[in-house]
Length: 240
Ligand code: UDP
Image (cartoon, rainbow, N blue to C red; front, side, top):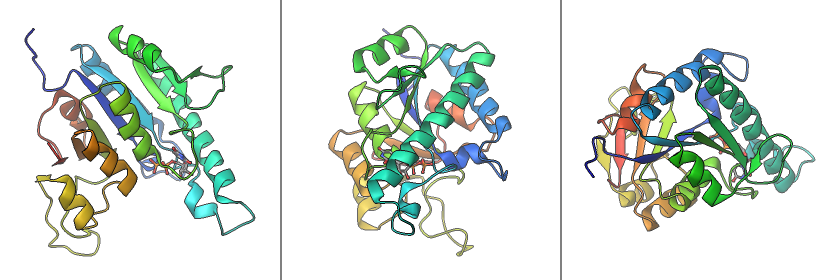
């Protein structure tokens, strides 16, 4: 069977921060609609798309734990619940333009969404539905980047596409160093040894151990999400 596109099944990671755009509200509906439209355009091509959403636009466990009476695990559970809010918002947006979308949560909230069932998720994808994985890994002390790597490996997706607000990975922080260079490609080792803030260590090593390439790209540039999903060169490729 010929493969017209580089990937047949992808895992798109959308951070909470990306959903917020530059608004003071938690979610910018223009961003969720832009994501939905671009995902729609690639599902029509037959590419299967699973999404892991973050929650940092609403609640980030690590920044609350310790600074208040919240212990880390409780804070992280609140963070995981935040990802469910984003997931339902994104699902509703996708369905409003006719893309069949299922949300699966890592812990049970069966009135709201399906529980995560690996085989069922794969079945949805095969039927052309988009699956949004919410509540991260279901465990405190992890991140949604790790959930993205984990779900990618579980459902045999070929790549993690990490949508961010920056163009990719730089050799230095572009906010402080105007000469920072955007890197085209990197090895996993480059990321871990140079401490480039791409993903946390748990996430990147999980990708490395399972030979999952990661593409870091800017979702605020129109067309970039669909380009990344179609396998066109965009952003920085890690481990490819
Ligand atoms: N979280 C967690 N376990 C997971 C995934 C997420 O405890 O497997 C919690 C954690 O508190 C995190 C929050 O959910 O801060 C939101 O997720 P994340 O920070 O990864 O979102 P993003 O940075 O992508 O917006």
